[in-house]
Amino acid sequence: MPKKALLVSNTGWYLYNFRRPLARGLRAAGVEPVFVAPADKYLEKLRLEGYRCIEINMDRAGVNPFTELRTLLALVAIYRGEKPVVVHHFTIKCVVYGSLAANISGAHAVINAITGLGHVFVSKEWKAFLVRPLVLPLYRLLLKQERGRVIFQNFEDLAVFQTHNLIVPERTVLIRGSGVDLSRFSPRARRDKSREVVLLVARLLAEKGIQEFVEAARLLRQRGSKAVFQIAGDRDPGNPSSISEPQLALWKAEGIVEFLGHVEGIEALIAEATLVVLPSYREGLPRTLLEAAAMGKPIVTTDVPGCREVVQDGQNGYLVPLKDVKAFANAIAKVLENPQLGQQMGERGRKKVVAEFDEKQVIAATLGVYKSLGIL
Image 1 (cartoon, rainbow, N blue to C red):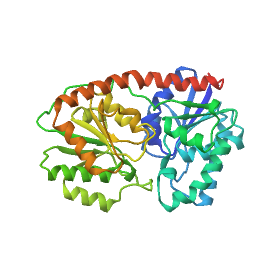
Image 2: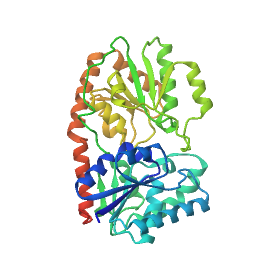
Image 3: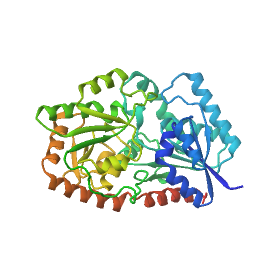
Image 4: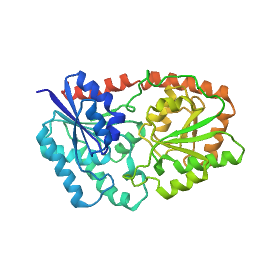
């Protein structure tokens, strides 16, 4: 029987969109990847590509002790039944519960990917305040195991965990993002040059800066801008910070921003954009910005962890202060009003992604973590 690696996340969407290249790399190395996540249409897509998937009931925002215990026990049962050589966890709840389950079931090795600090760390809601004091000691207990590794996507998240004494430096690795397919995301000419397009690609979550984008678009429209403002991404009802249906309806009725929903083949949409923006509150490493930069697009984003890993201010885009709508709008206007500047920024962005974020480099580095545990 081939060795098995369980890739565990709180959504099939995440695994499908971000971890298929890793799964292909594991297959090529003789390890069978098995995806574990709650049932959704993306698990079905993974099955259609020939991957084995295991469904699990998991409430991403849940704090009910009985349902949470049920999730933990389900993971224990899966790990005991599958007997993987390694379990690889993504997202906070999977890192915590998955690591507990791995300890209980005697899993051979554990890799925990910190893909951003997440809602528990970032949010000011009461649920986050309630859970945070419980998560920190659990992290401290679970992330220091000898047969484990912790992967971070940016220096600043790593520093937060070091400050709280949650990790062992020798078992910690920095791998910047999940990489970009440079052949798929490459520069191409815009077909429609008759209009300027400002594009935001993100789920409709408050912490992605959706409201700030709408307000900046409104401000620029008041100044006389004729640019088209688009958001590509769906609501995420399972996430506590998802934009409400009534709020979304109000914005749609206002008509300043085009809400496109989920877009398949996002590279075609990026190709038609003048610039790509992301006014996020905090990121692990935003792949949407990497994809945009790979396609030669200038970027305007917030000066926060994750985003500033991608953008060098004034070189391949602009960094603006968090939640500063006026500064955000001014930076967008600066790019719109100077096409030559935008082109130069886009060219520099492409070079940066090629040098630092090639998917092949990222997969090789991740497989190197598996090798350090004696799995490959």
